[in-house]
Length: 256
Image 1 (tube, helix red, strand yellow):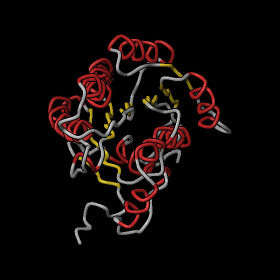
Image 2 (cartoon, helix red, strand yellow):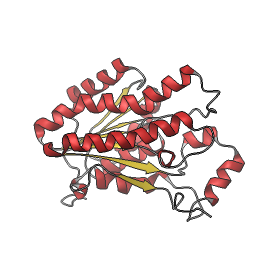
Image 3 (cartoon, rainbow, N blue to C red):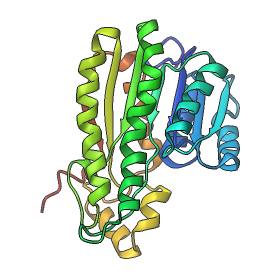
Image 4 (cartoon, rainbow, N blue to C red):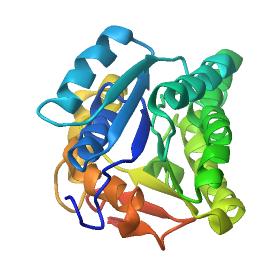
């Protein structure tokens, strides 16, 4: 991709939740485009294995930082360590998230607070830490990984849908704040993708049902999200900001 609009040579990309699934796929995609990559998650052993996969065969730098995104202190430390070790962060992908399905009258305060902190507040906090450097350089990209559950919903997805919808509002407001500084802010709304999160909360019947709900009749593969992330994280998407792109195999459009 060198010399193209998608060329990320010389850029530093930070992907939270980067040890598996969509995060790992996006990190590998940016590394293949020439970027140095920082990944974070809660488990250092998983991060170390993922970093080998991400940088394999490529002349790029990689850094793996263990971080609990429900901890404000860890979020701050993640930003500081990434900048200290890599010099800067040009592209931030807020991908870490979780889902604890509960009916509205059964939600526990503990689960609600944790999902809000992880899926929403950490995105704000990490962006807040890294935006000053982007402003100084007059260039930056922030990508929030929302969900189609921020556009539609399903029984028991109260906290998850609330946070993913809120990310879309955060995207629009931050884009207005940062546009004059050469920083774009966008969201990606994935649909059914073969990752650990949906597999952990859905039954076999539900997994099959979600496949039939897509226009393409199947679940997405993680690599199929990478192109959109590269678009939004490079010069190729320089005039795209404050919006969301749905990558769902045609799930949301299928009403009947």
